[in-house]
Each structure stands twice: as structure tokens, then as C-alpha cells.
Amino acid sequence: MASPQSRSPSRAAWWTLPLVRLMVGAVFLSEGLQKFLYPVLRGPGRFADMGWPVPEGVASLVGGTEVVCGLLILIGFYTRLAAAGTATIMTTAIITTKIPIWLGEGFGPFEVRTLGEYGFWSMAHAMRTDWAMLLGSLVLVIAGAGPWAADST
Image (cartoon, rainbow, N blue to C red; front, side, top):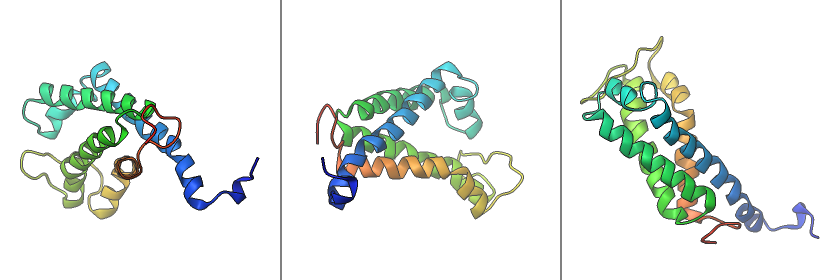
């Protein structure tokens, strides 16, 4: 058996994709389920507080997408397509919830939440998970599922 040091960097990177799938898939599955389990905190109530029109419909669409895409990513089936969906969700979340923190005010229908501080560093702190999920999703869009996946791409 070859030692980890003897593997080529590209082969080692290929074998890390299941870890990226686990991270991205588990977070999206959990967050999607919570939109249905805790509707006031994570579902329609939260979307209404942010200023989304038809918050019940938006929360159901986002939550359902997160559950389906999270599961697909976890098992490695249609990984690139599912990760494109999660990347879209994260891009939308950053634009609608984190950019207002940077600006210190809402824009369009999107409200800024009440914080002690606004500006770039406050936004950077608030979007750390969003950023990690966006980049993890983009890795999967580009590289595919890696080994131990239903679609083995």
C-alpha cells in the first residue's frame, strides 16, 4: 500500500471530494429540513423578516431544493447539477442577506437585520458559512462527485 506522501497531488485531491460532498450535502440537508421543522425561525417566518414576497412559497422552494440537492450530493448522484443548485442558493443568500450588512441598509425588498455593527468585516463574519458552502458547491460543479459516488464522475 502506498503511503499518502507517495500519491500524486491530483490523486490525493480526487480522493478528498467525498469529504467535500459530506460537508456540503450534510449542511444543505440539515438546513433544508430545518426550514420545515422550525418554520418561524428558519422557514417562512425568516423569509418574511427578510422581505421576500410570498415567504411560504419561497421557504418551501428553498427548503425542498436544499433537502433534495443535499441528499443527491451526499450519495453522489447528479452531483454537478445538485451542486449548481446549492451554489445558486448560496449566491442568492449572499446577495440578499449579506450585502445589506455591508451596506448597513436594505435594498429593494430585502431588509437588513439589526446588528451591533455593519460594514465589510461584519458582513465577512456573517457570511463565513455561506462562503464555504458556495466554494464547496463550486468545487463539486467543477470536479464532480469523486470516488464512492452513485454517479462516479
